Image 1: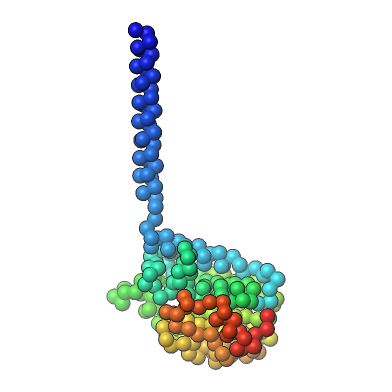
Image 2 (image 1 turned 120 degrees about the horizontal axis):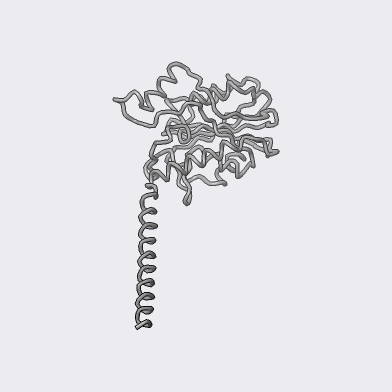
Length: 253
């Protein structure tokens, strides 16, 4: 009788342990499902993380080349959900999501070994495209252009004097450079430096960027041959494309 009771007790304990194990698995799966972000949220976080890393590369690494760029991605409301498939401002590279200008800056860095600086504004731009809303990005940018505004910058270059070559990248906004790029040019005296411009657009090219930069930096040598590409073709660019352009303009690293 005693053996039977012991056997029954052991069987009961085994059953309870097995039951606890199943419950633990269910909780684990439920927690995983509840905390797994949506694809668009993950895309936003990845792009924001990439841009944050770029901001931290401002300090000089011993290179005499600076690659400064402005991008809509990284300067907009962090709640913006990025559609990695349809967004004209995003390039997919394996599992990474990059802004167009970030992607181009990375290619230039591959070829030149320069330091990258992300031109970040203190106040983020609206993320919406809704003409009935005062928070519309197009309306906001158009207003900045009309007022010839100079947005305050949140990130700054340390020891600009150590660089003798500056690559400056930007998208075409309303047929002009973004006003934040003007803020960058106002902040730094690039006298004596060689400036190369790179750009993406919906088809309008870099417009008057050469003359604008030349006027703002009269004592710098601004290259007329701008690397300008349609945003739909950015993802097709490779290191050899950048090298070909640099060879054309006589860049000597």
